[in-house]
Length: 385
Image (cartoon, rainbow, N blue to C red; front, side):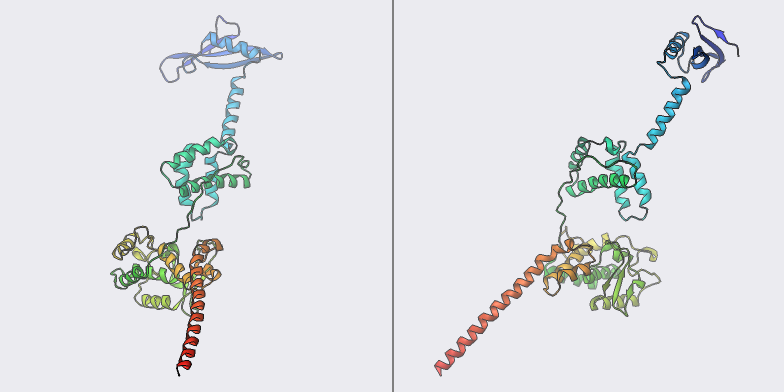
């Protein structure tokens, strides 16, 4: 292509096919000496880059004075910036690394929902080093409009967890600011009166949905969690050793709990009419059950239980409350029966055991009074004789 001079020294152009249109356009070049070496550089196209001979001349002067990088150098800087941007340990990138490292985590689905809905929009493009207290304050204030302290604490703890994960994996530095977690009182203990319990058991014994009714009774007899009941297989029930194996429970490691006589009798009855499913309480097609909310709520309503009573987890609380209030089960044993990882969770029932112990202590006082009255009566009878 022919080189065409302009009125500006060291500036020329060539005519080429126009990009994005018909006809020709100019492509401008500049020439100058740099350390005794003649340098020739393309600076831009007439239409695409809105380049003119005057602009090219100005760029040539800046290049000679060392005030501007070459086109190739500029492109190299841009590429380096893009690579650096890709390597920035933003909160969103830490989430992707965290998610990839925890494919089997039970809480991953809920973590992802919380992250995508609340954390990513406000903090996703920032790195831990860029976070300031105001960022977390804004997130907390926004959440307070629609969510409980428990949900807010969950979300803020997830932010901390992501940064701590990144720091352990040497992807980022530690979080340099304090994360103020709202205080949460999540110790909720549900219980039923003897009348409510009696009514519920009567309904479970006669309900048309035998599988759901028996599942709820096993929850009441064993204190098993919802997921543990759904995952329970016949291979986990050992009638010879009178125990049930809980695989992958909330506490982490597999656990074994006793199979008491009431649960054993019910499971033996249930086993006689089972189909081909390996699950004790199967869902559709014999597959693992995923929900009983509709049926359980129907039974709960018929029994006149409070709306706040959770059909399955509430029965676990009832089981624990009955055990504690009996005065016959110590807190350590109750912790093992409930498969709590630490004694703190079991302590919510401690006051019920204290009440049982007080009742026992009061009985001792009553026995003393009865003994004294009995002795007084005998003395009175002798005097009368």
